[in-house]
Image 1 (cartoon, rainbow, N blue to C red):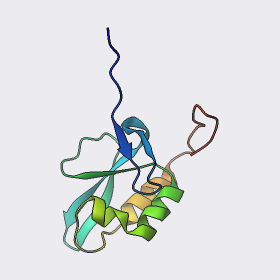
Image 2 (image 1 turned 180 degrees about the vertical axis):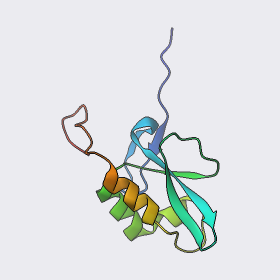
Image 3 (image 1 turned 90 degrees about the vertical axis):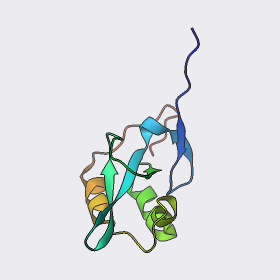
Image 4 (image 1 turned 60 degrees about the vertical axis):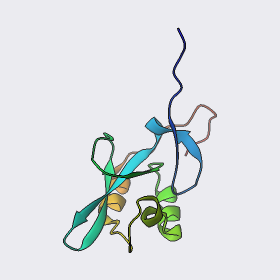
Length: 102
């Protein structure tokens, strides 16, 4: 029986490709003040999504490069407060197979 390959996605922060199950899906929710970014760890929320390593360094790069607006096709700058709070509450990630910590 042939093994299925895992889908790969590109992190909007560091621009490295990784299996989709290692990345956090981000969606934009329309609210009264514009758009706000929400984490979607279950990968079930409707709408267009952007993928990012659940790492504050990748988040900082994505914000600096304004990558969320482009990836989610939004006009203007989305509010990233809820996403930043989610990332600060996450435990540190374990080492990958190659021994490096992302």
